[in-house]
Amino acid sequence: MVTGGGKGRRKMREWSRGSFVCILSWQFRLHSLVAVPSAFRGSYICILSWQSLPSALPSDKRQFHLRFLQTSGNFVCASFRLAAVPSALPSDKRQFRLRFLLQFRLHPFYQFMQSAEHAWPQPGKNPSRHHRHHRRREEPCLPPSVAVRGLSPRVFVRHSQGSSPSLRSVRSNQSQAHCFFLELGRRRVIAVVCHCCLSPSVAVRGLSPRSLSSSVGIIQVKPPVRCLFPRSAPILHRIRPACRRLVAVALSKWKVEYVLLCFQGFQVELPSHRLLSSPSERPASKSHRLLPHFPFIAQQPSQPSFLSIAQPPGERGSLSRAVTVRRRQLWSTAATACSKAVRSPFEGFWVVVMVEESGRRKRPNILVTGTPGTGKTTTCTALAEATQLRHINVGDLVRDKNLHDGWDDELDCFVLNEDLVCDELEDQMEEGGNIVDYHGCDFFPERWFDCVVVLQTDNTVLYDRLSRRGYNESKLSNNIECEIFQVLLEEAKESYPEDRVVAMKSDTIEDINRNVSTLTDWVRNWHPTS
Ligand SMILES: Nc1ncnc2c1ncn2[C@@H]1O[C@H](COP(=O)(O)OP(=O)(O)OP(=O)(O)O)[C@@H](O)[C@H]1O
Image 1 (tube, protein in one colour):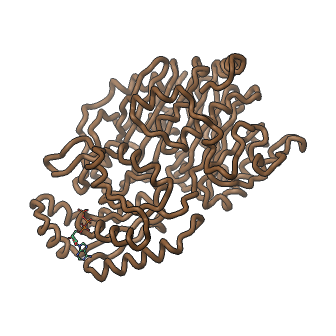
Image 2 (tube, helix red, strand yellow; image 1 turned 45 degrees about the vertical axis):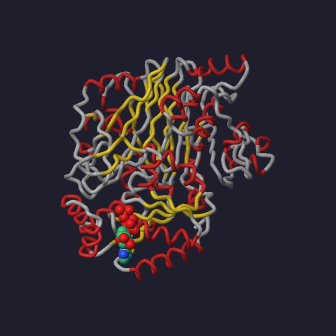
Image 3 (cartoon, rainbow, N blue to C red; image 1 turned 120 degrees about the vertical axis):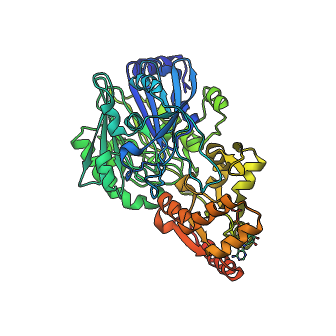
């Protein structure tokens, strides 16, 4: 986005020439491309995004889809998606989505992508999961080895030498902070991830799904540049000390000059003035506490996000239209903040921007999942009545709003399009107060739900219920198997923090009444901070 006049634009161009900008984001959406103003032409820009990193998966077992969404002018935007979890790893259903990779001309990533394109195997080789009533779209899939190199930041580097990017990660044991260096040509990007519960895998890989539940990116022009980001709102109070330590480390060890922390939707009381070089630079007011140097992204406590400050640029339109992706506040905000940050009058470095996911729902979101026939709809209907939450039956929604890729004769159902479903639900989920009813849970963003209920039914009872529905033999046995092996429970545990997942028996009407009453109490006692 270029919002400034001619002078600002020229200046921006000047600063961005030969620079590299990398935006690492979580659940990135296309409108993040607002971060790519025309002034960046000639720069290397890359936007990487992932939903979850399957740390337990042997890297060579991962498979990813790659599809180009749009090529336009100087950039290419591509999307990676997990193709399938190999059947040899039935228990690991964690998803990895590196959705978009955006590049400007001559970007090494672009070369990588081009070479990878030739290496794609034919589509449709990956096993689909039988228990779900939808299939992932069959798209060209990168060979695992290439895909992993392309997607895992650490391994990415090894893909090629010379002018290719290189990345290594370093863990700071005293701060629970993690830093990774990305080298592109002679430029070096330093990103620092600060998290209160880095898992061991983070130390190995540098990034992990849960630890990077937030976003963002940034980055630089000439060394040194850095970014720093903590995690989610509810745990910020625990993160703060780690942040401070990290900042201290960054300031001393890595000679970080400025650290910019942006949070969405809540007030953060980081002692940012400690980062400043002189007392006169200290923030004058509470609302500017975090960002005294960067008034263009000064936090507004009364606002749920930075969006009110960052206006979406006109350039966003073309891409949004091209791919029909709904605008998501978080990312347009992050991206806009990034682009604005670029305009900051600090030569020699770019500012790192981080946007936290908002924890500001006033009412909770509940996901009720389980094998078909376990009573999700019955339970959700009663619960919605008792709590006045909104019942969203994903199956109905898919059918009514055509959020699918057609009908599957074999499975006798629509092939659900996860992206369309997520985009459709995003605004409502952000608002809160929803009960989502679906027999799958691993493709919803983890941040959406405060409670994930898995209904379970005795096999014989379920068999009778499904037979009454007239299911054919294969559909019947698939669903019964799914229940026997507790596939949905496993999936929920893999996809959400365990303390958010609750299994509930649903054999009888009494079970339903009890479950509804338990959940109603939970909803009544729920607070945004809980
Ligand atoms: N706990 C229960 N006790 C008695 N009957 C139940 C119970 N749960 C569900 N049923 C009955 O089983 C049938 C299926 O229930 P329901 O439609 O709520 O299941 P579902 O999990 O939403 O299925 P689907 O995923 O296919 O939409 C309904 O006829 C419902 O009355």
